[in-house]
Image (cartoon, one colour):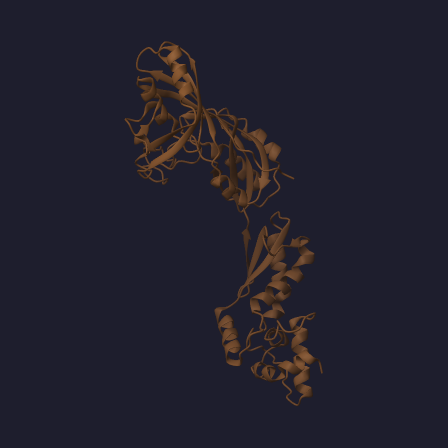
Length: 411
C-alpha cells in the first residue's frame, strides 16, 4: 500500500462515510502527495479503504458537490465561447458555487481536522481551465491575466473580468479653452441641465475625450480614464514635447489596437496633439502620478505701468535658485487646503515685448504656482517677481513649454 495512503486512512474513513464522490474525497487530502488528480487520489483512497476492510462505495449523488463535476464539459464550452468573443493573450478561469456547498465543505474540514484539503473552487477552476484550453488556444496566466472568465456553476453563466488597456504617451494642448479631463457640470453634477445644455459637462470636450473617444471606439471598450503627470490650467497651453499621460480603457474587447492609427486620428483635432503612444502596464499610472519633474514655463506679463528693460532683466537674474513660500492661491482656495507650500524657482529669463509688457521664461520646481509667483497674490506668495520689481505685474497668458521627465526605456 502506498505510504501516503497508509498515513491518511483513519482520517479518510470519516469523509468517505459522508458519501463523497472520488473528486471530493481526493480533495480532502489534495495537498498530500503529488503527481495525481483528485479523482485518482480519491479512487486510490477508496481502494485502500476497501483493502483495509472498510469498503465505502461511490455514491450515486455526491453529498458535497451534488455531482457538479459531471457538468465540466458544459462549463468549459461556455467559458470558451465567452473568452473567444474578446481579444487577449492569456486567460484564467474562476468559479462560483452555491454557498451551501462551500458551507458543507468547511464544516467537513472542521469536523475531521482536515488541514490538507483543496477547495472545490480550486478544483473547478483548474479542471475547467484544462478542458477549455484546447478550445481557446491562449496561455493560462495566474498572476496578471488579461481576461478572467468566472463560471457560475448554478446556471452555467459566464461573466468576464477584462483587464484594462493602458496607453502612455505625451499630449500637447493648443487651446486655452479646454481642460485636461472631463469636467462635470457644477450645477447638475453630470446629469444634464439648462446651464450645460444637457451635456452634463462644463466644457464640450477635453484632452481626455479627443483621444479617449477614438480609443474607445477602436478597442470596443466601455469607458476611458485619463491619468496625467500633473495638469495645466485650462487657460494655459501645453507645448514642446508635451505632458506625459496614461489613457486607461476599461473592458476592451480588442486589446491590440493600432496606436499609429490612434495617434493619426487624434491629431486631426486642432485643439490638442498626441505623440509617443505605447502600451504600458498599470504600474505606470502610479509611476506618473508619483513623479514631480521640474517644468519650464513661458509667461506673457503685463506691468501696471512702464518698466525699464535693464531693471526687468536684473530682477529676473536675481531670482535664481530662490525658495518661495506660497499660500494656497485665492483662485483655487475653494478646492484646495489652505496651506503654505515651499517651492524653488531654479531660474528666470526676461525679454521685453513693449513698454509695459514682457515675457518671462521660468524653470520651477513641480507644484509652483507661476501666476502667483509673478503677481504675489496679494502677499500670499513671498518673494514674488512683482515685489522684487517694485511694480505690480500679472500674467496675461501662460504656456508650459517643457516637462523635464525622462520616460523609462522601452523594449
